[in-house]
Image 1 (cartoon, rainbow, N blue to C red):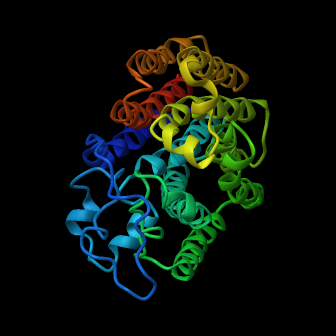
Image 2: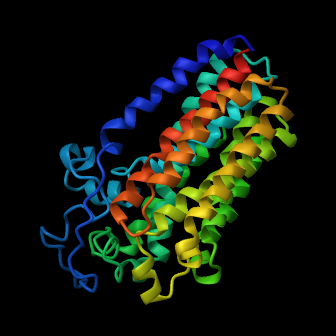
Amino acid sequence: MRNTVRLIPILLAVGALGACDETKTSSSKAAPSASFRVPPGQEAPADVAAAPADAPKGNWVDRFAPDQAKPYLRLMRADRPIGTWLLLLPCWQGLALAAGGGEAPLATYVLFAVLFAIGAFAMRGAGCAYNDIVDRDFDARVARTALRPIPSGQISVRNAWAFLFALCLIGLIILLQFNTLTITLGLSSLALVAAYPFMKRLTWWPQAWLGLTFNWGALMGYAAINGKLSLAPILLYAAGVAWTLGYDTIYAHQDKEDDALIGVKSSARALGERTAPALIMFYAATILLAAAAGFAAGFGAAYLLFLMAPAAHFAWQIRRADIHDPAICLAVFKSNREAGFLVLAALLLAAAI
């Protein structure tokens, strides 16, 4: 599709918008005592109202947001946009996959890309708020999360629920702009979202469930253009699940000591020193499944050349990740925004030729 040529710089240039915050990694310094709780009815003191330990220093929320808004923006992780990117990029990848055989006008792709961006921002925020409500007792006992707005007492559980519903309303308004299949897919994803916080109590592989949840947008992006699903988007979705298994296992190594103390399960704890071989398997599966998705969509052999860039990035992640260094784990995890854009670029280039 020739319109895809003009779409490439539009989507890729958007990636620069979050660069300032994401190039700064958070300090590995421990937060104040994880057992600290603000008494009911009292305002959090200044040191507790500061940004959580896992927030990048000097982010836009700390610098520019009104004081009253900061706890809510932190609750939805607006100060850490990497999660929004990881939720949004599969949506854009689904659009790019559909562009290989679709004949929708360029304006439709741009409009849908913008709608998915707004929806991802709102629904990632809603998901974080829900996760923090469910996990508030766990978060209060982990140094990295003890200063999040709910466990630190900056936001009550009641107000957190109200904020969550407001974000869901925004997401619903965005969702209703799409076709019936996309709306149905979007609503059905809520079951995955609702179950996710409990997976760390039930299975050693909550990262797999996160993959099922975070990559649902690949199906929605494709369906938004074509009004149907086929083998290609299902393979792309599977590639995203494998990708998430990789990057979220790296992320989970930050908390494995605290998780062991409080009984939270994770792939990081399950794999331990076997993490590097597992990452090779996860990321190899990502590339192979993404390749299969492209061929199922009718892409040519050049698509394999385009996939060499994300493959090289995944190889760098495997070499760079140090499971005993939380700061490096966080930096490598954040680099998956670039990995997602490289996969997106491969799909766009293949669709354009």
